[in-house]
Image (cartoon, rainbow, N blue to C red; front, side):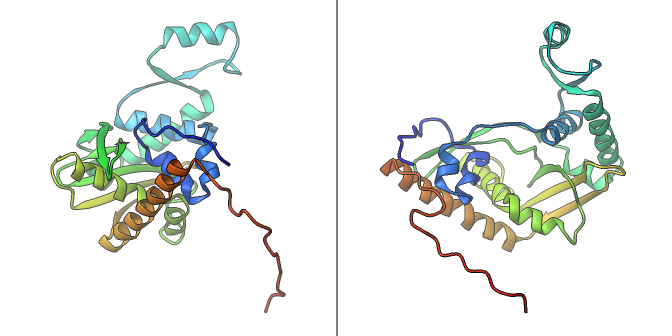
Amino acid sequence: VRMRIHNTDPLRFSRLKLMGKSPAHYAAYVPTPTGAMETGTAADRLLLGGKVVAYPGPVRRGKEYDAFAAANPDALIVTQKEGAMALGIAEAVTACPDAMRLLTGVRQETIYWDFNGRACRSTPDVRGDGFLCDLKTGETSDPRFFPFKVRRFAYHAQMSFYETAVACAGLPAVTESYIVAVEQAPPHVVTVYRLSDKTIELGARLWRLWLEQLQVCEASGAFPPYSQSIVDLELFEDD
């Protein structure tokens, strides 16, 4: 894929991490919210601030929905099912003292910063006294499986990106980063994770590599896919 991508807009981590798939994925990025994402966003608002309303109708379209949306211009509008699940998630998190302590601070304040000449922007869920915390909803918060999710979605790189944002913006120093993980399905089990220094270091290496690759792509105008040549495919019998 060869195209000129303007780099005047501040870079968000949600876009940068697509370099972990391929530069072609980065270039073709179009945000497409899913039902699960909207449930998570609704839970975020209930816990961190913001208005959420459930639309009583069967579908979110038509004249009745348009009137409902016009009457709630500042609200995130969800279905009844999404709203009930988001409320359950919020109640579970609220019942966890460690989670609520870490969700107390400056909430969802956007930080504009610069790294090696690249304008960036970051919005951590919470910036507290010496720490950062992000709220993650998903299918599991089980310590046996959540580390795989951290690697898959590069949560450690995201938290390192946020720590760098705080440092580059000259804000009070951050020494620890946390993730409050909560399951979307009842009973909405909550697990609080503290990311080790080694984990943050691994995350830093990852996003800085992606940024270097991105800047090369932007300079050349080439955003290649997984491979630009024929790939040999060979399967092996199981041992």
